[in-house]
Length: 105
Image 1 (cartoon, helix red, strand yellow):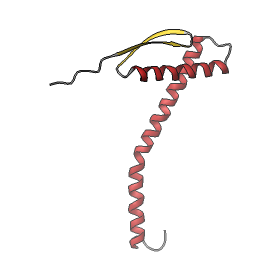
Image 2 (cartoon, helix red, strand yellow):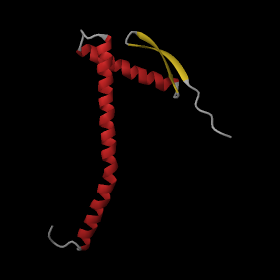
Image 3 (spheres, helix red, strand yellow):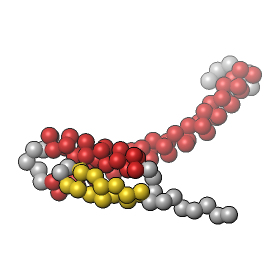
Image 4 (tube, one colour):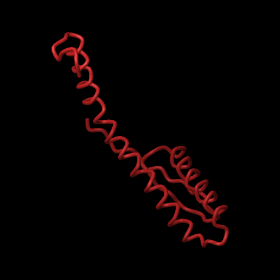
């Protein structure tokens, strides 16, 4: 029997003074947590830029979150290289311990 797709969850949430209906395939609690995170970031920007419009704050918030996502992707890519570097380092250490490379670097 084929698995059915998760039932979409729908919540209504106030974000930065506006009401939004949000639909997602995760739990309602998770959707609310994400919405709360975005709202916190909007208020944080609003405190830094008290005269900015809601639209400007929303765009700046989106840019900040996108920047964080890109940085996380870069770190994830870099960490994928670490096991290879670690394995090579172990091989070099092993060779040094066995004396194959020699007494001098």
